[in-house]
Amino acid sequence: MEFKGLDPRLSLIQNADLNGKIVLVRFDHNVVKDGEIKDPYRIDRSFGTLYNIVERGGRPILMTHVGRPRDKKTGEIECKPGDSIEPVVDYLEHKLHTKVHIPKFNIDEKHGIIGIDTSINLAIRNLRERKIGGIYLPNTRWFQGEETEGEIRDKFALQLAGLADIFVNDAFGSWQPHASTYDITKYLPSYAGFLMQQEIINLNSVINPQRPFMAVVAGAKYDTKIKPLYAIYEKVDYLILGGVIYNTYLCAKYGINIEGITEKDIVAARDLVKKDEANRKIIELPFVVESDTLESKTEGKYRTISIKDFREGNKYKYILDIDPESFKDPIVADSISSAKTIFVNAVMGYTPYFTAGSEALDSTIDHNRIAIKMYGGGDTLQEFKNLCPGLYLSVLDNTQYYFFTGGGTVLTAIEQNSPYGLKPVQALMKTGT
Image 1 (cartoon, one colour):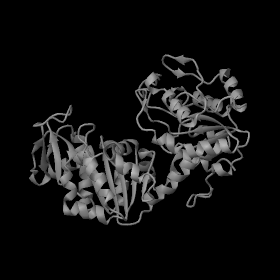
Image 2 (cartoon, one colour):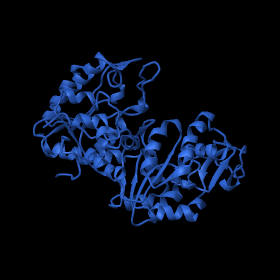
Image 3 (cartoon, rainbow, N blue to C red):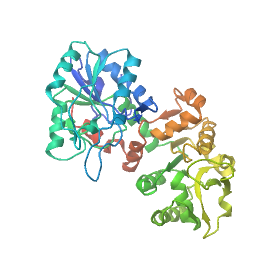
Image 4 (cartoon, helix red, strand yellow):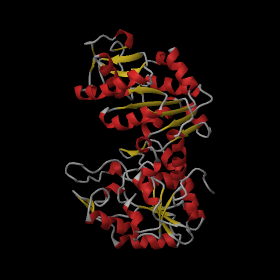
């Protein structure tokens, strides 16, 4: 099986000799929160690679990160049960009817798992002898060497490499160059899995889109999205903003104050306002929902307001959603209906209480029958599934829709103007034959 549109330098799993080999596979199964799987979509998307490995005689050792257990300031790692991969293993065993072993290693109170010891050797022997279907390593971010630097990290990468004959990276959503996604490629023949390949190919539709190209971008913070937002702005014909990003833009353009929006971000957003005065790409959503509180959606404590009523110096409470009427506005509706490529990395409202804007956005986009529609990011996909379950199920296999497994990865690739600039992907272009 070959995918068209990939850089020929990329090492592909279909070109690897897997028969009788232990295959270490890095997935992005980061779908557990507080001990529960919120949405198994990323796991389900990895089944193709997993099946291919086993069908061709490989024996799989799986790994993924879950959450952010490492304190960036202190470097301490807290191995909480809520960040365990056990729910993922339970799901795999239920779906695949096989036994998956989780090795147990000593956990240091402050440094997490120091390393991989020889206690795993029996499980590897059982894996080779097909007494078990797979091994799933603990959360990679529980290991001290995963995100640190220097000798500890290199030792961890070597320990990982010592478990297997071949490395396969299928973790498109894990774009950071950590030990389990990047360093390990120095020590093992390394290949891109099928999901990784599909994501790279579909990224091309965002980086080199059919026009008109519309993007919908939202976020809880403005400062973390500035660089990718500017990169997207340069590519699009139309741009719709939502969430805190839209609120910050409104403050900067109209000279108003919205609760929760900092002066620092407003100053930063003025550059975008100035840029758009010349290019006119931003499609403003005319009706927003103001709320007195973040804690709930309480009758009498929220209201729809029009941006036409904004006056310099006006102060507003929290703006937590887009009123669905915004998507009936002729300018908004026409820009969405005329687009030939639509990329969405956005939750329009403050979840879980304010969801009408996201639901209206997804429904309006679906009415466009000509566009390629691409959704990026776990939160975006989760909202789509929760708010429009019927639509979600009906379009999962629709060739006009594509759901990326990593929103941050897509934004980073757009910023770099290529998926091949991502460090873990670069590493797969240097190793393997």
